[in-house]
Image 1 (cartoon, rainbow, N blue to C red):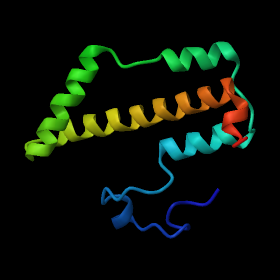
Image 2 (image 1 turned 135 degrees about the horizontal axis):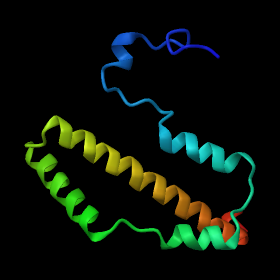
Image 3 (image 1 turned 30 degrees about the horizontal axis):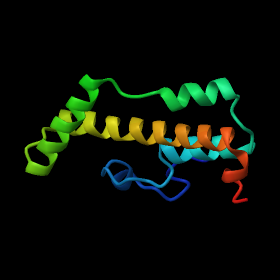
Length: 109
């Protein structure tokens, strides 16, 4: 396996906070699409029912407000970034779940 430096990423870029295309969400998306398989109906329904609890929604809204106001602290930015990634992952899983339950719509036909 090649290192990040061998692939052309230097230490300055890796430590700069620059977002790389291959983040957790895109990696999982490719993994889910690789087999072109479907989730079981039970798994699909479980993913479609998954939601953040109200306390997490309130925390995300508060962090978002602080970000818009420019008052977000570094630890809060990290938490907000985690919430964003988790939300994207949940969206991806729900999309896979919908396409597994409705394969004709997912294939464009």
